[in-house]
Image (cartoon, rainbow, N blue to C red; front, side):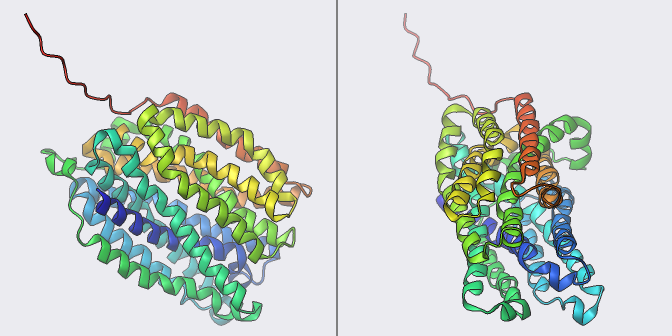
Length: 423
């Protein structure tokens, strides 16, 4: 289990590095380079639009790779998704800007972002299931939390590279070529990820199946459509919180408040670092007290914290902003630390890879794709404190709270040994 968990963590971190480095670039630099004829606000919205395409592609990726995972096994999904996401990310770093090839530049950006999302749509399902189906039942949430730490590690790595480049390059150098370096680095990381995953064994639960679903998506739609919709709605708040903090707030603070990115990135990275560190602890609580109670607690905390978070962000001061981000990340990980165990347990094994991945990635469309766009538009209509954003995020938290309330508990019941019967 330690070797498997470490390989799942590393591979997931690499794929999320690819995904997050695009989000950071969209917030900081892609607008002027690929949409120069737009106003600054419209350019940012357009860049976030290409960012959102990755989320739209993720459910399609979960259908494609989920079919492979349910028919051929979980392990092939991990290799194919890593190759697709890594290749698309390297290619983003090679796309000429609008000044060089005109409208073809944003079109290429859009296509490559779509391929990124397609690959990542398969990654989570494969990594989460391979770990969860190997893990002992009484510690399933703990071992399954290792892939859930991957996004935090990938985010820190992506933003650490951008922060280092921002600190060492001039604005002109960063805009000319510096922003491309994090995308090129994805090629090296993909090779490392493939090497780590080369020794993984197939899920024993998959090998035990005698009857594999012929068309997994058809079974999911026919028999589990309500569960898919509930899981998507339940997970929307996690995506909304994460991308409000890591993507929208970065653009808002640097463009509207005049905070430098070398100040903003450490504030965000510090909160994400704490979130990643708390993941195993929250997962242990999920093994002890159940998955559903933690998810309900995280949603309630998010609903209560969104207005304070935007108020603290509007100060433009490092410490208050960090506190605001930290509270949001703690609410987020209280839910998402157990999700890699919870979602697979909700679906029967023959369609588990498709059902869990589709529900997970549809939540990304609802929460992750729309949040930076909606939040940016709401800010333009409000005052210095973006109360509209707080209301939007609170509404999503309440929606997710209702969906989690309708889902059942899945924590395995501890097996006890019966006392011998004596005459």
